[in-house]
Every structure is written in C-alpha cells, then in structure tokens.
Image (cartoon, rainbow, N blue to C red; front, side, top):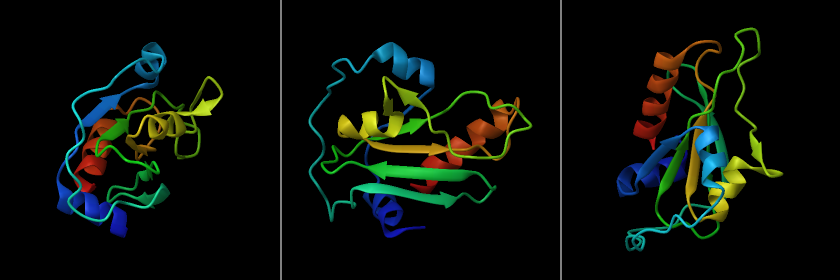
Length: 135
C-alpha cells in the first residue's frame, strides 16, 4: 500500500459514505456541510490520485483534495456489462469527474472496478468493504 493509505489506516478517522451514481446526481452538489473536521493528527496526504489492485483482484483509485476535510467518500459505481474489460469507473456528472466533484467539496474519494463485471452485487460489496478496510 502507498504511504497515503498507510497514513489513513493509522489515522483511523473519517466517515465513510457509500453511494451510487444516481445518489450523487440526486444530491446536485447541494449543501452537505457537517461538523468541523477533526484536528489533524499527522502529515496530510498528498493531493492527487493513487491507483492499485486489491487482494481479490479489483482495481482501486483513491484521490485526495489539496485541502482535505478528513472524510472519505466511497463510490459504488453501477452495473458494467459482463463482456467489458475490468476498468476503474470514469463517471462524469455535469462535465466533471465524480472524483473531481467529491475532491472539490474537500472529501477524499475512493472507488473500485469490482473484481468482475456483470451482476456481481455481493462481490462488488465485498470489494468496497476490502477497499475501505485497506484505507
């Protein structure tokens, strides 16, 4: 794992929000402010994205904004036809990537390709849990 992921594991803070593309679209970027972020307990992660592979074979991406509020949004993309190649989602809303939108709100962003395509809800859920546990 990268130093950024190790930092998050040691830090052990931050709410994890799981949602799908339709939820992001429904939110429309409205006011989702909450309590102030916890005090920083170490070196802030470097802004930008890191890609990797989870233990069960799913690809993952985690992105940090320049000014991180300490929380993580875990993105669960929708269905991908079984015949397509395993790939990270490149979903866009209103001309901006979902990771860019989430980072623009101050949240870290993480997603996974899932280990397989098709009707794989149980495996996709396991991959998201594995991703969250690795952070």
